[in-house]
Length: 383
Image 1: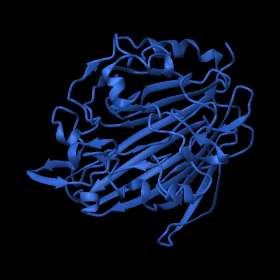
Image 2: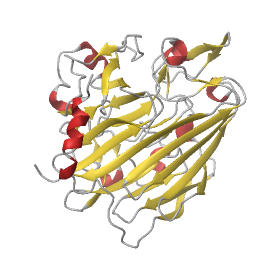
Image 3: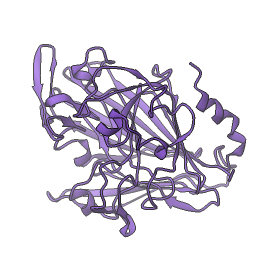
C-alpha cells in the first residue's frame, strides 16, 4: 500500500520555511548545566540546556531523563515552548502523567502485571487498574540518571546512564541503560537508546513528551493535523490491553494515512475511541525493519510548526491527553485542561511479553537493545 500522506510531504517541502538546515552562522552547539533542586532523599538533580543556534533549545533534567522544555520557532521566527511540564522539580516530584519522561523498563502496559519468561513467572507492580504501566511504581521516570556531556562542535549531546538492578519493579536481570539526547543543526531532537543485561529480561524504552505545537498551555490539540505511516493498529480491551488483533485502519477513525486533524473524528461513535477516551492506541508502522523510517508528521496551522517523527521502532502510540483534566498547573501558571497535549511514543507493542505473536521484546546477555527516534522540527508558510 502506498502511503499517500508521506508522498504529500515530499511535494510540500518547498513550502517549508525552516525544514532544511540553515546556513552556517558561525555559532556552534552549546550546552549549559544548572542545579534543578534535590529529591526528597536529598539527591542532587541537574538541568541541562542544549541549543543549536537556530532558535531551537531543549532542557533535560537528570530526574527521570525528563524533557522539561523544548523551544522551537514558528513561521514568524518566534520561539515557544511546545512541551508540557513544570517550572521546577517540585512539580515532577508531586506526581504527574509522565510529562517528558524516559519510560522503562517497559513502556506501555503489561496485562495483570505479570509475564512468563523461560518458564518462570515474574510479578510486576500493578499501577494501572489491574495492569502494569510504564515500568511500575518506581520506573525510569522517577530515578536520577548519571549525566555526561558528549557534545561535538556540530551538535549538543547529553548522555544519561542508569543501572536497573535485578529484581527492580519485579523485572529480572541487571539492566545497564544509556540514553543519549542530541540536538542537531537540522533542528532534530535525536534520542538513542542502548541497553544490555546479564540475564534474560524484557525491555521496551520510550519517551513520553506531551506536545502542543501551538505552545504549551495554548489550548487543546484537536486542530493539529496528523499523518501516521501505518496501515494497521492494535485494538484494545476495556483495560487498554491489546486484544491480539491487527486491524486495518481503512474505514475507521484511526486512518491517518492522509493529513487529518486530531479532532475530526475523535468524538465518533466508535467502541475503540470510547475505550481509550480518545486516541490511546498503538499503530503498526509501515516498512519498519530496524532502519530509521518516517513514522508520523504533525502540523499546527496557526503557528505553522511542523514535527516529523522518524524511528527504528516497529510501532507508535498516539495518545491525545485524554486524562488531562485541569487539575495540573504547569509552566508559567498554565492549567492543563482536557486534551491540551498529545504524545507520540515510539515503541514495541504493548503487552508483548504475554503475546507470542507480537515482535519479541526479550533481551539476552551478550545482545544489545538499540533503537533511535528523531523528532524533527520546522515551520510551514501560511497556506
